[in-house]
Amino acid sequence: MTLYQPFLDYAIELLQARLDLSPYPIPDGFESKSATTGKGRNQYEVLTTSYGYQAPKLRQIRAAHVQGGKSLQVLNFVIFPQLNYDLPFFGADLVTLPGGHLIALDMQPLFRDDPAYQAKYAAPIMPIFEKYQAHLPWGGDFPAEASQFFSPAFLWTRPKEDEAVQTHVFDAFKEYLQAYLDFADRAAPITDSAELAKIEAAQLRYLRYRAEKDPARGMFTRFYGSQWTEEYIHGFLFDLERKLAISH
Ligand code: DBV
Image: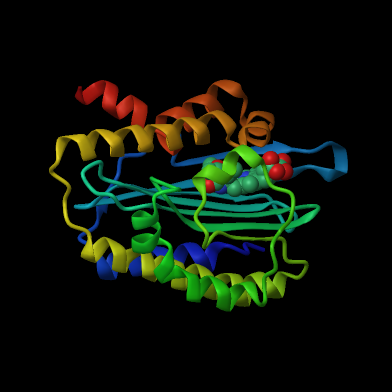
């Protein structure tokens, strides 16, 4: 039972068709990791596989796919643009736990409260958002401090049935990703140095929040230990700070 494999397959195929794609290095030991968890007769295998790509305007396109049976499936998929573009992040957090499904899908803005930015990168997505929200109602409780990192087109939902994930969520994922690649096609490089400084600061603000608050930290630590987990988070999933430290 790998609920999110079709999402991953679709995404990679679309990226290959639309972008000048090359591999993004995955540090040794992080391409694939498995562990046995649970006790006695309830033991099961949890496999985490990683995928990394880059394209001329997109610094890192990466996915983490966690497969641990019917009640543990995760696809976390994020696109981090190059620092000389004002593009949002593409963020998908597709999570299935024993309690149910939790779906977060968005074009995560660099500048949440800037009306011109919203007009450019959120307004075009609103018709897609509204179409799917009719089937996928607001998911409720949500960390307040995270809201600054989401756009008005944030699709946040907790569907009860697998079927809703396989149909509406899958369709929404496809449309959001296509729309993101449309944005990327049109994006022109930023050259103004004040603007570039604002973009770098906004990317770092987002990245630090995600690395610090990663909701998967507890789960990964239980399965694979804290050394592996911290290295995975800072050395692959949210690696911008390290990459800047090398290049500056
Ligand atoms: N989330 C990640 C990565 C994951 C991952 C890299 C590879 O950022 C999985 C794995 N997300 C994951 C898991 C849970 C969530 C929850 C396993 C469940 C945690 C649990 O219940 O034990 C969106 N993801 C969540 C939640 C939100 C998101 C809001 C609920 C967390 C909570 O209620 O505290 N995506 C997530 C998020 C941002 C984002 C917080 C912030 C910018 O982009």
